[in-house]
Length: 336
Image (cartoon, rainbow, N blue to C red; front, side, top):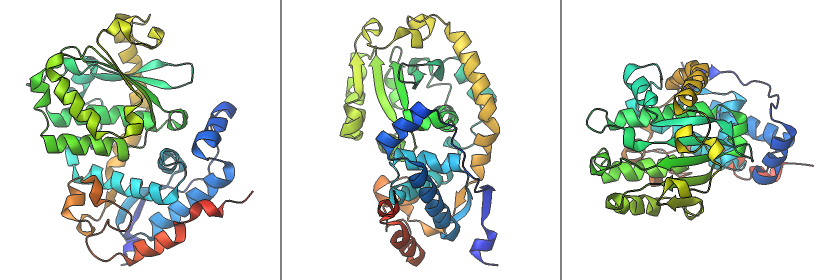
């Protein structure tokens, strides 16, 4: 039986009906080059590529899934292709850290209850969700780095299912209080580099503003290391403060404990309801797969430089060449 016949589509190629508000559609067109015409052509091109690419064993074809990659890559089909392939390979090859994203698992539930990471139920004046981080509550002696990755994965994957967030992006707020040297030993330097780089390049989210406060001087070297890994574009969006009170963010977006009006416990309960609504979709994502034997060892280990257009497969890639020829100049296809 041919590879194409054995390929599994976890979701169908649905007929897209745009759920975005008129205001959000205007933002998408201005910032992301998204129009009804560019969207339909890009979806068709991506689906054709996924159907004909022998590297994929199982994949989602629904518009919601594909559009998150197109939006983060401003409707460059070749860049979206690379991102999708990188994303599925990363989830599969890094195993437990990016799978079983189930917020009801006891260990995961405990970390969520601590308020390690959760999304505020409120949106800022630009309609963006705010993700709140409290890494100091994560016990590095009790929990593992895999636990940390999975809790963060649940948060991001849940938010990625929302098309308004795909377009408008996220605001991040982190309280560094309680973070100490043992937290830094959860990952090796090599793992840290690959997580940071893949986080920016692979996870299809738009990071618009990043606020950090209460960072202890003893771990400033680690912060400087992390800042050196991210792109200049993202680096310019990072604002660091010594005191929580000085953070220039609308405090009403934050828990009561940080100057807002809603207690953190209630925010977390609301976040649990939102996670529950996406739980089955997140678990279904575990079934996405590529043929690992068609990738180099470096690519399987998460090396960002190993996954470039033209260099993804360990061997010859005639199908990949054909697909790149088909979509390489995609932006020129749009007509008025």
